[in-house]
Length: 129
Image 1 (cartoon, rainbow, N blue to C red):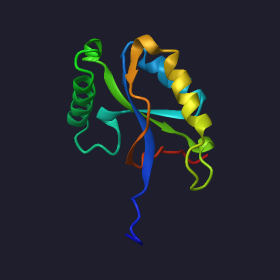
Image 2: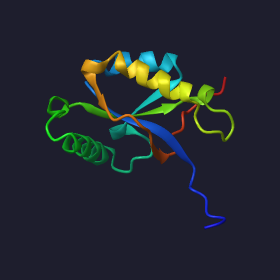
Image 3: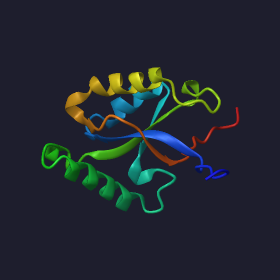
Image 4: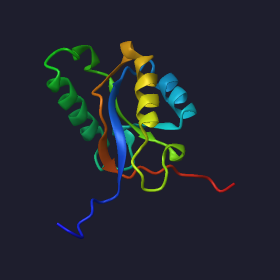
């Protein structure tokens, strides 16, 4: 239909992260201008803990037991910072590669499906400086 536009959204990877490495992974990704948003506390989640449970369960069920070790891991959305965006252009493949390469370095502590999903815009509170 002409004139219908998709509401603004954020391209994100949905990842299960071992809580033991979550802080280190977040710091590593921040250096790449990739932002980690735990689903349970994301500003777009009305009932974050419930949404986190549902996201985790869906991911685990889709793998039919292969990811059972991640049953208690933290579901996060990983979004791309401003440096990866050029106007309204799609994300460059280099952004995808940077994310997947960083996650590959933590393969024993993360579970994800290659590909991005979309969630309502996630915003970073910036302090006046």
